[in-house]
Image 1 (cartoon, rainbow, N blue to C red):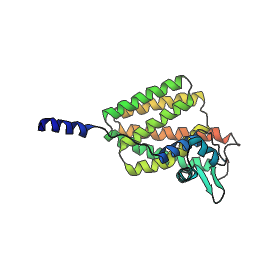
Image 2: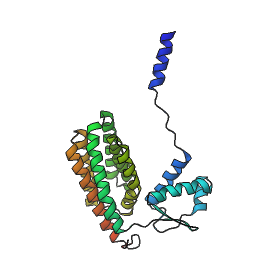
Image 3: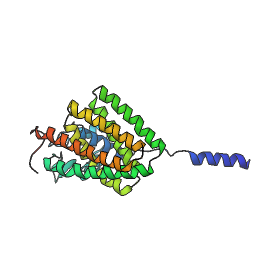
Image 4: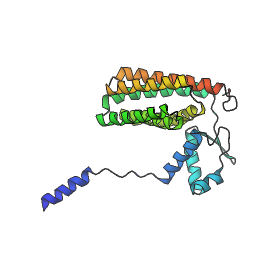
Length: 239
């Protein structure tokens, strides 16, 4: 009888916890996607009533979510005037991409020392799915998997302070990328860079992965700046 009880306890101990997403977290994520993917455009006032009806929430949780997105730099909160989608400037891009490149380079270095075979397998699976979207010219789906791969490398680094700094910039970096459609040549290069990232990670080659990730972000930043600088309607040239 005791053996049966012990067996049950061991089974329970191995059971994985059920992930629970709070209303607040889900609302923040959905609003972030609206901004990042351009449904809420730069300079546009956030339509609180419409969003409350769309998501079936009251003004209180919506405004709490807007505060989070304002802290990420995605929104501007104005007293008694609600929230507007923040505009990106060339100066913003010049500041953000080098910092994100340095963070990802460090994450790659740490991840090579700590990543498990299972985590590498997950990155590899996402990479092949991402390449499939690339061959189909499905840019939004490609971007989502691309972002997830970078997040998994950050998770594998196992450094909470680094993750917090990364998350503080991740939303604005994603938004900048969505505002600029990549040329075919740049998209081809980006996929080649991701192939190199996967290889270096699989080989746990920390110095090489660090260099590749930093260069990858630098190239990405130049692509975004070139594309957005040509679009005066969506990017202010003044800070």
